Amino acid sequence: MKKFILLLLLMTTPLLANNHLFTLEQKAFLQEQIRETLINNPEILVQAANAYREQRQQQSQQQLEKIVKQNQNRLFNDPNSPRLGAADAKLVMVYFTDYNCSFCKQFDPLLIKIVQSQPQVALIIKPLPFRAQSSVTAARSALSLWKQDREKFWLLHHRLMAKKGYHDDASIKAAEQKIGINLMQFDSQTLDTINDNLALAQQLDVQGTPATLIGSQVLSGAVSYEQLQRIVKTELEKLK
Picture 1 (cartoon, one colour):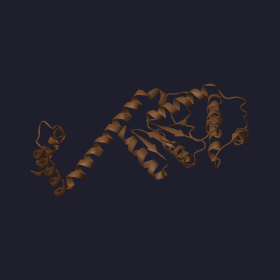
Picture 2 (cartoon, helix red, strand yellow; picture 1 turned 90 degrees about the horizontal axis):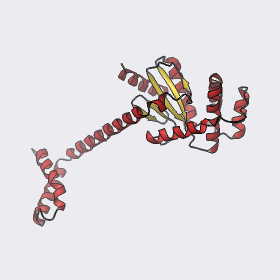
Picture 3 (cartoon, helix red, strand yellow; picture 1 turned 45 degrees about the vertical axis):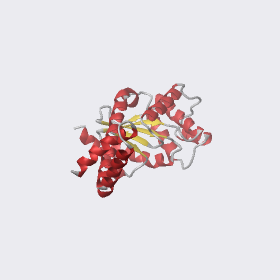
Picture 4 (cartoon, one colour; picture 1 turned 180 degrees about the vertical axis):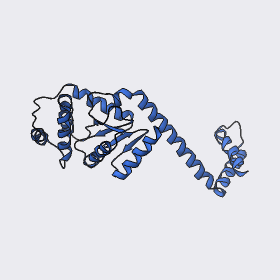
């Protein structure tokens, strides 16, 4: 009964601002009733906050699903984005990363391990050079090699990820030389790919790296292998 009364009182609250509908005494009375009801029934505020949080989560989820649907080809079918795993994988993870990101360097092997141990899972790499000019240089080097030699791309990718700290031109060139290549110039299309990655990240509300689209969620940051396994298992079950 009290909740019903509160509901009626809250419905009248927006009307209190209208000076023509209530006298000052009536406004004061209604406001006092609302205050007392909330004080005597604080659980109502908790319930309202929980309901609001759930509503916001549902809206965010619906927005994410809409964005993913609208950008299917850019996310999952871009031939210029490196891919690991079966072509017919049920679950395709999209991984936004930076070769200067320390957390990416920790998380990268876990994603690759998941793909290697789960035939139903694939991984797409979207370089997102947030951190420095050398992030852009490393990304362009890796993407250029992907277009030339996909097997050697992975060798370079692992080399670039293995370096502690930030890259510079010398460390990027050294990584290339260690796998037996010498990129004299970058493929011009790599800038278009990077710009598209930045646009996709903005639409997905990616705030930094690593960020991984896994099924119906965007995982921000790095997690343990056990946590990653659970997330992947949950998303695979949704696809059954």
